[in-house]
Amino acid sequence: MPFSRPACRARSGLRKRVNERYGMNKPWTLSPWLCVKKHDLEIERRQAEDEGKDLAGVERDFKRLAAADLDNDLALWPKAQALFAKVQRLPIRRGYKFKEPSDLAGIRKARPTNRPGIRPPRLSDAEFYDKMYGAWLGRCGGCMAGKPVEGRRRRSMERVLKAQGRWPLARYWSMKVDPKVAAEENWFKDQDAPPPGTVIEGMTCMVEDDDTNYTATGYVILRNYGKDFTPANVAEFWMSNIPINHVCTAERVAYRNLVNDIWPPASATCDNPYREWIGAQIRADAWGYVSPG
Image 1: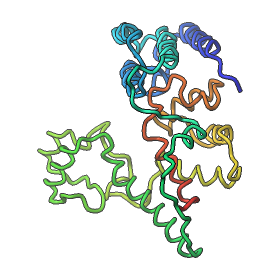
Image 2: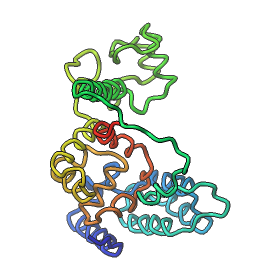
Image 3: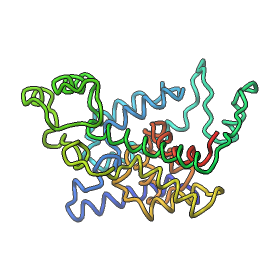
């Protein structure tokens, strides 16, 4: 299905008129990653610079939009989208050392010719099951250990754990923190409280999480569509089974593109400053499980 930038802008204009008519100056679509925000501009600029884009001709545009009230004025969203589209068309700056193709054929062509060969492991069904089960438990355990402190700084975590006598961390996080340390570190309070069931006090199972959702999603996509599944199959499965607010950053922007009728491969990069974040590595787990070696 073709991607249409004019259609994307037209929908933004319609959204603005509807919001104005019904007095919705700050609709729910202003939640993170569903609408272009001011911090997205800096992320996009840094991402484009990292990709080798020559930004000399757009630096003034970035500064102009950064000075505006992009977080609250929906009328500015099309301007941000236009800037993102302009950045995608920029040439690579002279002297950029890296070649980083995104298409499979380009990646294969860029591989070194003297790369070592890899032999698929010879495993019995029981051994294969044990390794896959271990990988899944490791994914769940690591996710559970990190979920209560996502976004926290190492220094803060180290101080709390030392105050608990639990440095370095063993097992999972605990809510039992010295009140003075907790207050100084703003630890586990109000909006920073850990999600239910993710600390020792009250933990009964692995809670639902977007990271582990992707692993389960990969398995079901393979089961439903087979090894020759397509990006359109993945898009269909996401929209039928995963709520949009259960995906984050790059994936939520891609989801937003899908529901705006922007289909793969454009859905991955259109207005998406998070396009090179860690999500692809997280989503790849399931394919590694079923392709040992």
